[in-house]
Length: 118
Image (tube, rainbow, N blue to C red):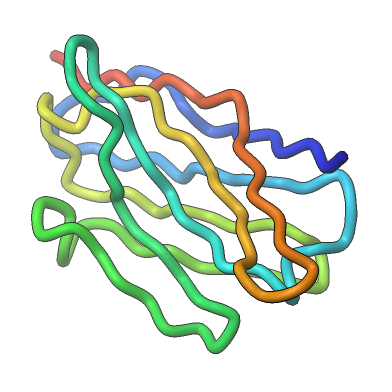
């Protein structure tokens, strides 16, 4: 079993920045896709950004131009740089690491709280 640990969450004022990190307990990132999701109170979990093994990145419309996803396979970490944060970005952010081809796997972190408020 692989453990994913997110870090970097916290309280930030509107317009501020945070950098979230996701770290794995075993070396799997080089064969996996990495996706950040978030879930706000009373809302469904939604995709924020993803990066494939080929470093193709994609973003939800509501974060385009503000958030940047990156990966460091050598260290099994992935980051989500979040700039120009808005109150509506307040949520628990989750890291997901998955692979569809053999060997398949799908791992989730425990989440990190991001609160954007003045």
